[in-house]
Structures are given as C-alpha cells and as structure tokens.
Image (cartoon, rainbow, N blue to C red; front, side):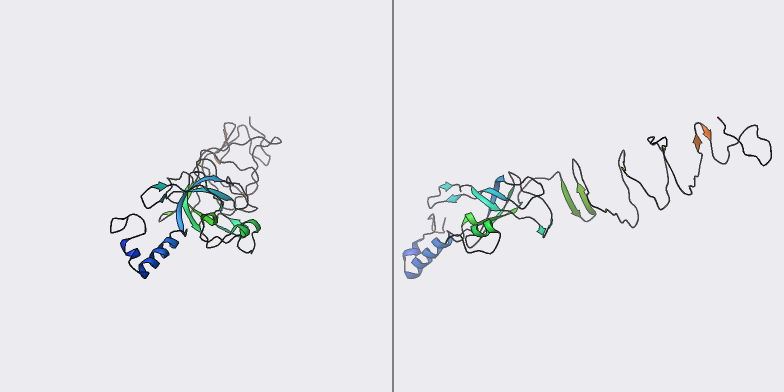
Length: 253
C-alpha cells in the first residue's frame, strides 16, 4: 500500500512523466528478484547419519500479494543444498529436520550444473535470482532444544537425553584442578592404570575371573580398618597360639 492509498507498486506519479514511468518499470523488475526469505523444511534427504551433505525441500513462508491485496502462497521449492559446518573431512553433523524454520538465500545465476557435478560449470540456464537456485541456512524461529551444546559465561554444557559417545584411538582429559564423574555406576571394560593416589570411600567388589576377583600390583597404603572374611588384617590383627621364635604362623580360619 502506497502513501496515496493505492495497492501495488504503481502510484499517480508513475505516469506523470518519463522518470515516473521508468521508476515504475525498475520497481517491477526488482520485484521479480529473489534475495532472502524465511522457509520451513518439508522434506530432507539426510537423517543425522554419517553421509555427504544433502538437500531439502522448503516452503517459503512469506506469501505473494497482488495489487488488490490478495495473498497467494508460494509453491514448495525442491532440492536445495543446505549448510553444514564442515572443513575437509571434519564436520559437525546436524542435519535439518522437517518443520525447521530457516533462511534461504538465492543465487544470482542457475546453480543446477554445479549441484550435479560439484565442480566449476556454466549456468544451467539463463534464469537469474530464482528461488530454484536457493541455499538453506538453518535454523531460525525454532523452539527450545532438548539436546544441545551450550556455551555460557559459566562454561560449556553438552546435554543429551539419550547417550553421548566418544570414539577415538586416544581420549585424554586434562583438568588442572579436578575431574568428577557423578553417576550411580561406572564401568571400565579394559585394564585401568592409576598413577597417583587412589582413595576408596566405600566398598570394592569384583567378578571372579580365573579364580581371582581383583589383583593389585605394587605398594598399597591403607589408612583404616581392613577385613577379609570377617577377620581384621591391619596392624592390630593377631594370631592365637603362636610361640615366640623365628617360625612363621599358619593361616587362621
């Protein structure tokens, strides 16, 4: 709606002279150029797996409006490449999902040949600034996440309602003050080497393997009471019926 109450791009000054007529024509041409708009994902080729970057089908969310104010929705735009944060073979895999809202930018020339070959190529046709040559960047205007990496003033949080997996030949954690695991249980499937002080604040249990439940090699220092099968084995433990001499005492049941 113009300042004169007319709908559309034509105004009384549009036909008042050569400049007005030329301005009207320029505005009409500019109205056909697709730049950037908000879209909703209606289909996506990938589902979060390890794969090359895929494509999305999108529904533009801003309707077309004619000079009389009648709205006409855009049709679905198919096969648009979407953005992934990737350098070489290093990537963060976060594929779009149906229902996501994001931004589409539209290339100035036909990119279909480059999409097909993934190499330098001539434009696939003479079209310019067309929605068919869109690129999707998500996401915007979306809801509250339940799985996320959060950066804040107090640190970094990695949150998942299901599972977090670290997979590498070597995983190292460097903590200058402390490392804490808050879990009802922890499991190590292989050998465990402790090079510093080890403190037990509760009991220790183990599954019997080849008749041996737990093997500790090296010096072990205990502070407190130690029992085995109900018998104390610390420095206050004594055997009955042992006469002074150079002999060794036998086992006490």
